[in-house]
Amino acid sequence: MNRSEIMRKLSRILILTMILTLVLASNAWADSGIVSGGVVNLRSGPGTQYELVGTLSKDTRVEVIQSRSGWHQVQYGDVQGWITGEYLTVTQSPKLRVTGDMVNLRSGPGT
Image (tube, rainbow, N blue to C red; front, side):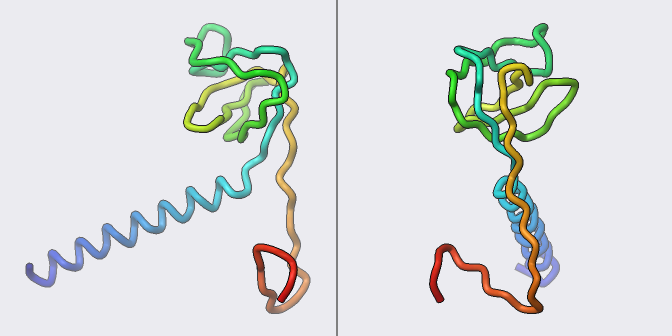
């Protein structure tokens, strides 16, 4: 393997790592929602004309990916689809404000 092939491979690995980091970080701060209807249809697009991809039961917690025209794209496990806003209560992710110059972020209480 010559130097240029090694550099290409390293560049690809770096780009892939950056993409994965962005995807995982955005999911960590995504809004969530709770299904408020009895059994609600999950569709392939934001409207009743789109194909049914599944159903969700009342009180099911989902991750909200995006919202458009009164519909929310959600993820539940490995399934993604759209649900009308009439049957979903969206809860905002907590927002944090750092007030110190240098702080440690820990997974739980303690030092």
